Amino acid sequence: MTPETKAAASYSRRPPRLVVVHGYGATTENHWFPWLQQRMASQGWDVTLADLPDSDAPAAGPWAGAVEDAVGQVDGRTYLIGHSLGCITLLRHLAGRTDPWSLGGIILVAGFTGKLESLPELDPYLEENVELQDLPGSIRNRLVIHSDDDPLVPPSASASLADRLKAPALVIPGAKHFLDVDGVTELPEAAAALAGWAS
Image 1 (cartoon, rainbow, N blue to C red):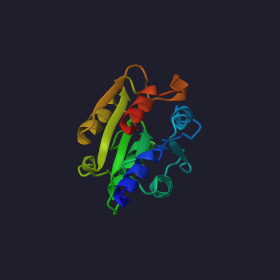
Image 2 (image 1 turned 90 degrees about the vertical axis):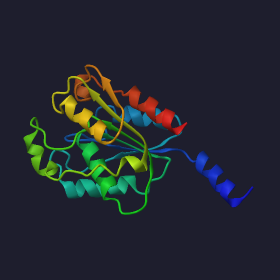
Image 3 (image 1 turned 30 degrees about the vertical axis):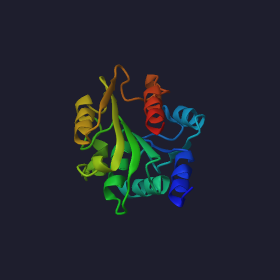
């Protein structure tokens, strides 16, 4: 076996890695994050739930640092998933990377860019937009998941994000903003997509 073949075999045996990034006002214990961690870990995945500081008063610098620490080095066996404000935080991180990188996949749940009329208190965080045009070429699999009745992020904003990332959009009726208070404590659609991508 050549060194190249050995390296390829080792790469394919390495567990896929998932980093989950929560949003505004959330913790790693909320919504569907613990369920997803347990589900993917039971399938052999290495799962990290990024713990962002002061989530009730998000600041771009500290959040960017926490995401950078959680994500670390990425490759084709690395997958990312963000929820709400965590989506734009992940996208900023990827757009700002200066190292050559590629990613196995990204899922953005209730994702958006730009300011939200429903949450003007986030205007300072959202003041700086993110350039997305170069990202699709470095991310093998992309998916935007949103509902048809989100009271915080207009479904049209998530659909626009999907278009800009050249990503399919999966609409889940009646899921609102994918919060545990709305009864969303599991997200099997995300788990199925991840499992399919890594197979």
